[in-house]
Image (cartoon, rainbow, N blue to C red; front, side):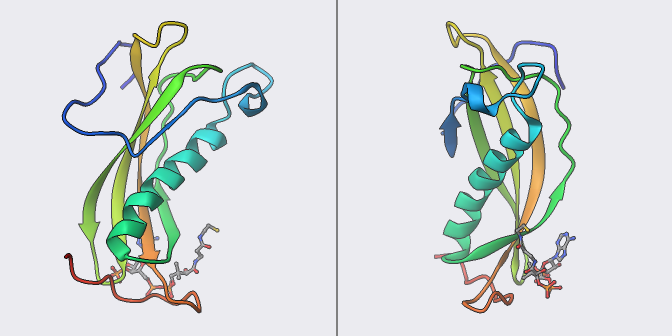
Length: 133
Ligand SMILES: CC(C)(COP(=O)(O)OP(=O)(O)OC[C@H]1O[C@@H](n2cnc3c(N)ncnc32)[C@H](O)[C@@H]1OP(=O)(O)O)[C@@H](O)C(=O)NCCC(=O)NCCS
């Protein structure tokens, strides 16, 4: 992963699109990895919440590797795939692509990670994921 220009995935929409601002950069002027990670968590949670039909909590995240820096004004797209539904858990992969400013025509893959969420009840305890509708 990394280095080459790629294309955005075709035939599906990103769950989230967002453009980092100057407040989101580190002292090198690149966007904080943690900012990207939190948005990946949000994107994954959108899909997991829909599948769980209610409240969820993030229980585990597997390996972020950042292949490309992200700069202010890049347009980030977060694509989510549901990969596993357990008894109470939902696992998704999140892929993050950046369209480079100023033209937003060059696309690079920034990172990807696997998130596991647990469906929880009103007291924060695991509850079974309901059957798919
Ligand atoms: C998420 C939480 C409710 C799970 O409670 P728990 O009593 O540990 O639940 P369990 O051991 O029954 O595990 C629940 C599910 O999570 C899965 N799970 C637990 N730890 C896991 C891990 N490290 N990686 C992947 N899946 C994991 C279990 O396999 C189980 O899935 P299944 O029911 O589909 O088989 C509890 O750990 C919690 O509240 N954690 C804090 C969550 C949070 O606040 N996250 C935000 C970041 S701080």
